[in-house]
Length: 228
Image 1 (spheres, helix red, strand yellow):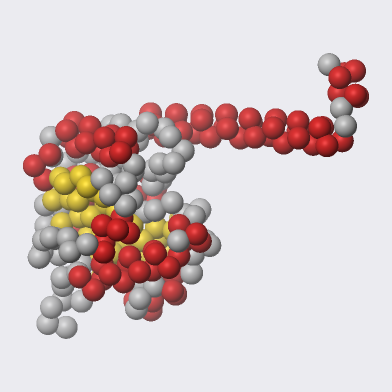
Image 2: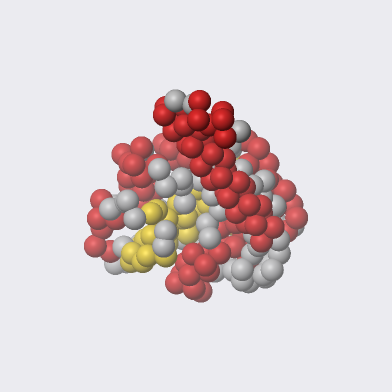
């Protein structure tokens, strides 16, 4: 092995070193994903402690438990009686957490078909199929349609891949603006990003309550009552 290493060109050595680092990163991610898959559960409310299925794929990034707990501590009792929307839903953990804490119904929007199937399994396991709608669609396209949504207050959770705030920034801003334009009174909007996103770009930027939960940054907006 030593003789083979000596015969390698500098370029081959660099490529070998990069491949070795990539394999190490992949192993680290795989262990982290397996740990998340084993630990993913509802944090509070009626279904507290219930385990959720998660396939462990890297394209699905469940919100960290501490971030989800912090968000629901902030929105508090306001979640009761609302219609929740879990956009870029992944495992459905956010929407199911909302149901557990008193939301009357939830719409999950997830474009990846196998992942949407996992949401269906989690919904069935908790026995909430009558209060859950699973939409397999691109969130940006879905939001442009004339979607029939409840007139009651909403709790809208947007937790996309962080790269969307770089690669699809205009789409993300358009999505928030469209949903705000359609929203009834007394809604809650929760946007999860990372430190690369400038929350001042959002509509009514001064009204968002922005808090860091490294590496996440979360913005919460409460829309006004109808008579305001």
